[in-house]
Length: 588
Image (tube, rainbow, N blue to C red; front, side, top):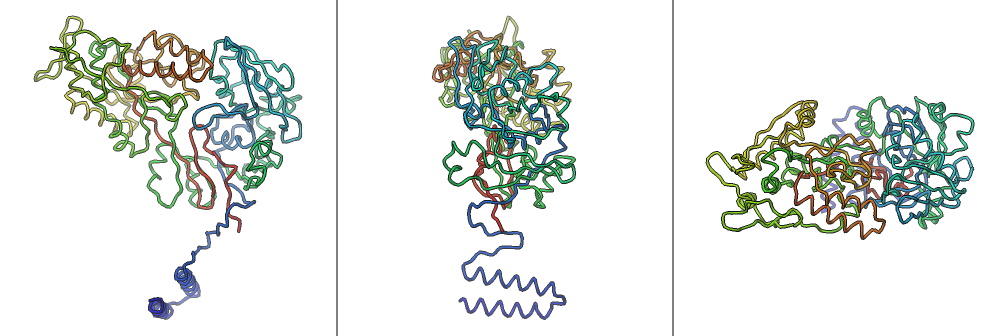
């Protein structure tokens, strides 16, 4: 058989050779022959752009990108692409792992007082700045005080809004006093730490534009040129090598990082296609464009963008808990994710990213209808999970005393007959959200619940919500980096969001439940992990039974990698470059 294949190839080769007119065509045929022979012999053919992967080895340059940096000071930059590459230079006291737990970084351990107001963070020994100066607690004190300075505009200011005082008690310990107890304080110590000695003679703001970054991280700053970009080199003395056994024995592989500067982020994907960029992040809309590309390595993950339906509890119809529960049961989130998001979403009940360590306990999310003759006429005991997931919207409405005629479901509420006729607001400029809203309306109509879709400009949607003139609205928010739902579900206890300036979302449904406020207080006030889980579980069960909102899903973002980037690729919300220390590029 092999002889027949070779004979056929020779004939084809002879025919093409006769037709060839240029040396270039002869060269192409020769390469075709080389590929054919390689495949026949069981080998692997590599094009001119391919490099034989012999496994991890030292060398190579990782090519990243940014738009023009506003500053190279990590606590001041508002450019997310600049913050990404500065993350290779600077480090925080802690970082967040995939489960959203605080992992020691520049601080190796911490303690908290019984009242939860005083935290002490101990600095890791043997850490040095890239210029050779030792890292100390005084650097942390300087960084925190700089971020909290009223004249400094820092994206990390919200993380420290609950800090009343910060003092380095010695070179190894920082003491932080809080305004209110916050058990998530270690999770909020992820801001980059800057060296105090670098600003001994210059003001932080004055030096921000011409700053030569000096950090403690795995790569050190080399040069910055607007034409050729930013160059980083491997920090051979990175402290983490003494902590990670694999790094201690093998070291890191990629020696340099080259950051190209583009006018627009959109230009980066073109540069990625041409090989000028090795790794790029894709937001949800960009991910939809590239998700079907089989020639690219794409890894998706749940973003911080949560979508939900807000129900106006001040509306007479939606003040009825049975109506809200029926709406919840009628909405099929998996169908919405499949049709509107093309699978690029992860189902979620609350604005807490799936996989968070608090979410590892199962909570009942449905109800069992009251099947008393004639159905229930009173509101159910809202402290009990009394409906099962097997219930249908029709069963729940019947149990709640709703009846049906040709005009639809109706019920006497506050002395007046009310029909279950709803209106769903959505902003018209978000095509994905509009499509999701259309599916939700279809699902509600299928369950016998009348609903009309109202598309408005975003400012008009906000106006209707702020005035309380709405029934339902399909909205979204960007969740904070700690699992805090008080900004949407608290009627009064706002341990974090109230002082953090989160304007993306608030309690638009008008939901008030003193039990939920107490559970939130316990989550922030208790330092034992199991106690916090128990409080979170009870809180989640309560809000799911009350149904003030209907959580839908988190949109997915993604990272895309060039074919010559090898190693473990497992990005997650809090670390897009996870496992970068084990990446390598095959060396020619």
